Length: 79
Image (cartoon, rainbow, N blue to C red):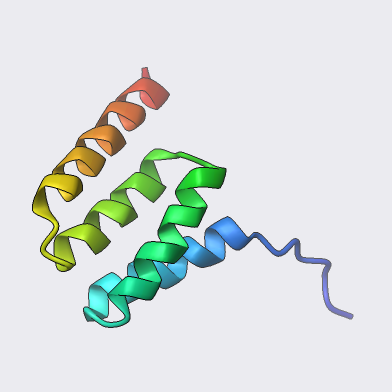
């Protein structure tokens, strides 16, 4: 009855971290989750989420590095 759905922990970790950043809650847990996701699949979207989590934590230098990394990766992906 139900279609087979592949569980993707990277997607789940990214979704959790992004939601936590938006609500400005559980940021320590969100940072752990997004760090795991980035270590598995270092994509521009995941670096973007991690930058947002770091920004919300007040870790501005680290957030800047990650958003710059996200933009470089995105640029490479579209060119």
